[in-house]
Image (cartoon, helix red, strand yellow):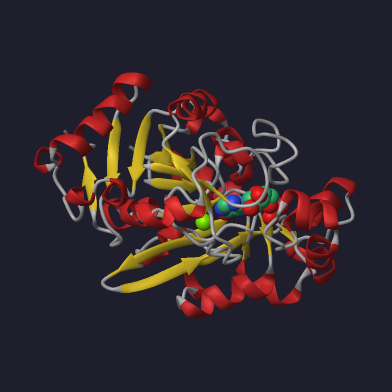
Length: 335
Ligand code: IMP
Ligand code: MG
């Protein structure tokens, strides 16, 4: 399928990075383009024993033939972007839109100093909320105003639409998760923008008719960082005991945890018009599934878990994460 958009179905940290890294290696898209908020996201993936984290570049970076684009809806922290370009040596295949908003020191200071943001909402402190506020006020600087970024600028929506006209294979990467959406999440415990699939497409400059697949990624349990309600939340001790304890890749905070939430999943599927689902970390909930790469080799418990999600939601689970490595995936797309 030529154009897929990948978004998170819960509160971020569903494992989108790993799923996208897998798809990139497998499908070798000509373009991966990032939508979403900005460097408040942290996408991690492990390949051949080495762990990588990206906050600005698309998670498809592992496939060296993929051009890495950042859409105009995304906020850029120039230092973080340039560091990642350096780290992955992707100078000649990274491009950002001239209209990406720029996060400056003042935005980070506001995000980490204001009691409301830091303590009530529990933001990531990366400056994204204050920068988006300035963008709404139309005083934010854009990528085209920053000399050290000029080398990387191109018209991202033109590139993406042109490649789609040529039937190339493209991945559009969302960040955060459906219930952190400014419009559809539990306001005020949300991020500073909508992050559902339609917005992610708008971030990169394509219209709704251009998307062939919408993959909504869920983790086999739910986590959230920062404030806001989490139904059936378990305590940190219980999370440690179950092996569900996670720590934020941007902030280092321990993530709050709860079991898989079918009602949230159904709502996320409808908000994003999911065509397929991905379920990650199946091995964390069902250790017997660790490293399994074929659906028929799954034992009864984990298989029932997946089949129940399909029966309840009516959407097929085509990708299942069963371990930390990028290739620890059951890929049922051809089944
Ligand atoms: P902000 O996006 O930094 O303004 O934070 C607003 C809320 O969204 C806080 O609860 C953050 O913890 C949460 N959040 C933002 N980005 C992510 C993410 O990538 N993963 C998980 N939570 C996030
Ligand atoms: Mg994350």
